Image (cartoon, rainbow, N blue to C red; front, side):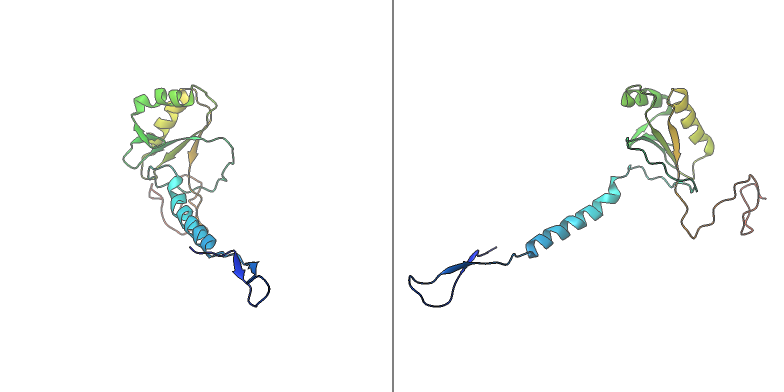
Length: 169
């Protein structure tokens, strides 16, 4: 990369050619580097979430903003329980949680459950965490997109589009 800071001035004068400073900045290399960084950040940003693939159910509840980082417990479609990215047996869940949180009952814990998993398995995990004394346990769900019709709130009522729920009503 050759760059000159001064250029000879044309013309003859006493003492030979005079040099004047170059007043232009070459921004092309700067733009190239910024575009590469932008692409790198765009590719890596989606990978920063917890690594267990879970198909979350939809909800209309608003998200809660809180500055401290929560601990995430995930249950995948096979029923395997994970703390962050590492699998754990249900019997070892409480000792591992106490070791990670240093037995602080005010640690925020998020439970992510795949929508294909049985409700009882999620409640078993939440009950185990709650019985261990952790008070700030929450479920994670996705907000429905604008074109999706939310599920009816009542148990066993027909959906607005005339379809039936799982009980056959």
